[in-house]
Amino acid sequence: MSVRVAPVAYAVGEPQVSAQAAILIHADSGQVLYEKNADEQRSMASTTKIMTALIALETAAANDPVVTITEPMVRVEGSSMGLQPGDRLTLKSLAAGMLIVSGNDAANSVAIAVAGSTEAFAEKMNLRAQELGMEHTHFVTPSGLDDEAHYSTARDMATLAAAAMKNPDFAAIVGQKAMNISFVSPEQTRRYTNHNKLLSMYEGCIGVKTGFTKKSGRCLVSAAERDGVRLIAVTLNAPDDWNDHIALMDYGFTQLESFPVDDSGYCVALPVTGGLTSTVQVQGTRGETVVIPRGAAARVERLVELPRFVYAPVMEQQAVGRVRYVLDGQTIAETALLAQACAEQPPQEKPFWEQVWESIRSLFQMD
Image (cartoon, rainbow, N blue to C red; front, side, top):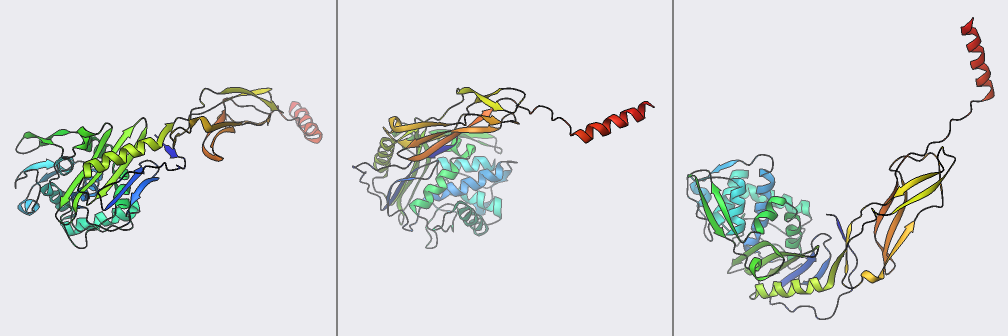
């Protein structure tokens, strides 16, 4: 679904959060609804794994390779999904392991399997960050373990989360409260519980990732969707992160609502000048869903812009007009009005001398 967002006039009562840095955005447009020190560079702990998992899933999209776990892959401290040297599982399973239970072993395994080393994988992470426009981020570790040169911002992490949630495999994983992860060898299935408690605590929560180290404090990236409005919140170093995110999401959903734009039921006969037919049928189209300030729907104006007539020829599916939706003087959406058939010109009468020439040719051929 394509979504546009209209400008929001912020209401009073913005949330108070414990986080040192925070941001709340509309996921589809990137519009900021709330921010606090959003461009301050900070360590982001295991929320790093959003990038690691995204690269893993993008790599696995065409052919999900089986990874044989080696001792260097599991030689990492911190949270683990319990991998052992000799285990064999797919890249997608490793991505699930790092997203559901924040397995540092899974993140290391992906890095080495995809790029040959964690250092080479960090280069891939930084390249992908540049592609996404994460201008104030630098990755060093695939797991998010502390390093002075490993940092991001709340704004950049929101950008990353918005991109990651557009990946169907990623979104399917982070939205699960618990998940069965299959191992190729030894052949087994293990069940893991998601560390993200918001999936149970907050109605509409659909992901994404927790994080914690002593240096970074509690970090959390979350996504929630209600009535077609999807929000992403990020907090860095937030002692009360669960309540921070509930407050942010509650605030965001009071600010916005979705406004469907659909003119597919609009149909009218448009006069045609200089054609074989006197009219052509015109039909509207379905447009984008627009996100607008809550309560503003009654102020949206629908303006049909269609000429009194058109000149032939007219091609089928040719745009002959449009419908504009205007809120407070600004166009927030528009749909095309399309001709549903051709309106051709009548055959042109040939010039006099061309008619004479054809008559002579005809006589000559008859002789």
